[in-house]
Length: 290
Image (tube, rainbow, N blue to C red; front, side):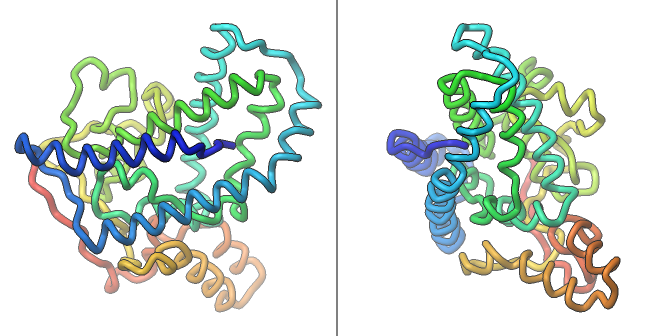
């Protein structure tokens, strides 16, 4: 769906370096703790490799879907604009499904396992999207008939937009908060506090969250806390990438009935983060309000 070209990887790497070095020089707090950063870096490399492999595997499918397209949307200015809005709408529902369907959550949980929000966290993504099938959301997007140039620009631009949303040091941005997904809005999405939990699934436009009832405002008296509402996978990249898959199949094996097995496969137990046992709940990092 998105080709992680060398220039994209280079731009992301440069942004991470600048964020790690510049904000502390001017007194803004940014976290790049060594063990956490090392784990996130390995997970990010795995994500890039998995995405490249998925692109090769799915290329033929999307070529065929585009051949059967319903319309021909040209690469005119309005085609790009329409594509940008349509893809953002589809991404909202895909993201919301990631938090509701355990089969999808098993991949997406990798991103939410981070206890630090920084630009690197945007690349801390699951390796198993090809298996979980999150890419299916791109099928209707391609089938509509957007020009391949439009598809590439739209998906890439929204992917890059997501990076700055993980800048914890970026404050609220005034009137933009009512229109766009901003770092403040995305901090809410990563928050495991009760007031923020399972809120704000938009990528670029916050309007979807307002219309579909998933909006919540960041409250400085209750700053978002990051991590999982369940056992922390720690710093082992393999455990980070696969711990929820292992837990899901273990729950299916122990379920006892076919109905219970299917429920273990489909329903995120309790809250996302595999919160099966409140006694095992791990504390998340507390941070001071800005």
